[in-house]
Amino acid sequence: MKVLIVYDSVFGNTEKIAQVIGNAMGSQAEVNILRVGNVKQENLRGLDVLIVGSPTRAFKPTKEILNFLNGFPKNGLKGVKVAAFDTRFTMSAIEESRVLPFLVRLFGYAAKPISNRLKKKGGELIISPEGFFVEGVEGPLKEGEIERAASWAKEIVKGKK
Ligand SMILES: Cc1cc2nc3c(=O)[nH]c(=O)nc-3n(C[C@H](O)[C@H](O)[C@H](O)COP(=O)(O)O)c2cc1C
Image 1 (cartoon, rainbow, N blue to C red):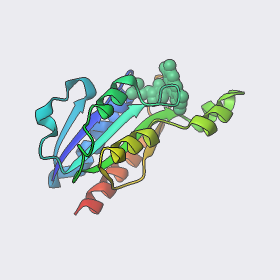
Image 2 (image 1 turned 90 degrees about the vertical axis):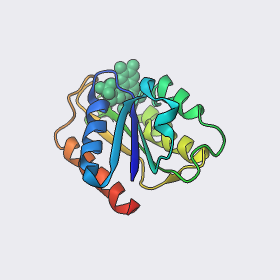
Image 3 (image 1 turned 90 degrees about the horizontal axis):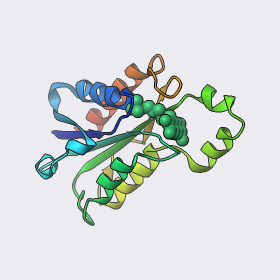
Image 4 (image 1 turned 45 degrees about the vertical axis):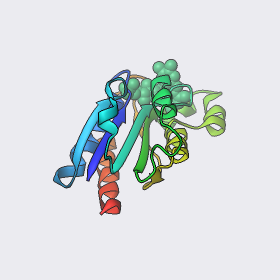
């Protein structure tokens, strides 16, 4: 099983989750983990699974992740299993703000639009999009999120076999 994990990260939290996911997929998978700017055409050849992760920025994935996803031709992900994740504010951080709860309900987070684009390009979604919480803006990751990311990755491996 050939897996590519593509991520963007400003403060390192999404990068950390990408690495945890990659490690948790274990020896059953040949895993490549790349920052979005470093993905080359050859990295996309012969993929079984493509996992894409981004920090949520203004309710969306980063511009780099959006450009990466928009760069696939129509049906460019046909035959590829896909999954999406993001990192995001904790619920308590959101609830501290007066306007954020409303805006978050309206506009959501990065993982869903990532998974929608992956599907639009022909990918087969193998697990629900997932979000991982960071403390404040810069992190660190909330306690327990590393373990949750590892279980999410194991679900992907189980589903793929
Ligand atoms: C400019 C900016 C906008 C952000 N917008 C959101 C947002 O809309 N929703 C959210 O949950 N978190 C938001 N965050 C928090 C980021 O999701 C958080 O910084 C990110 O998960 C950290 O991941 P990284 O270390 O990989 O960059 C925002 C942070 C910044 C700096």
